[in-house]
Image 1 (cartoon, one colour):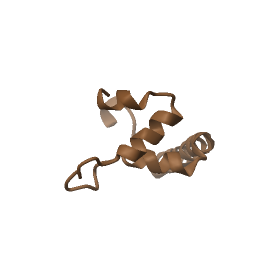
Image 2 (tube, helix red, strand yellow):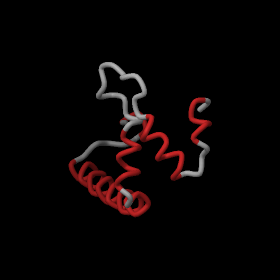
Image 3 (cartoon, helix red, strand yellow):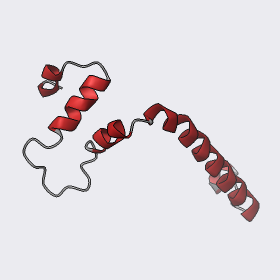
Image 4 (cartoon, helix red, strand yellow):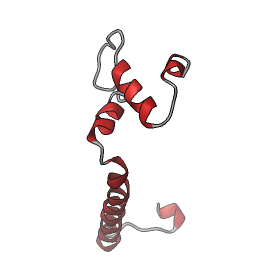
Length: 81
């Protein structure tokens, strides 16, 4: 950062921290109303495979069908996607 003429000071760090918190609060406030349906959020969570050591057969099939229905996709197309 110093190569860019930016020095890290306590004041700069605090300003950044406050701006980051304000941004994240605004972002969360903008996104949450779009996903008030908790069933859709649960279905979306199946896309996060990071917690699985193995992916079971037919993992997330029901959830993907829910998402397809919610977003106007034909369930038959899920095999292609």
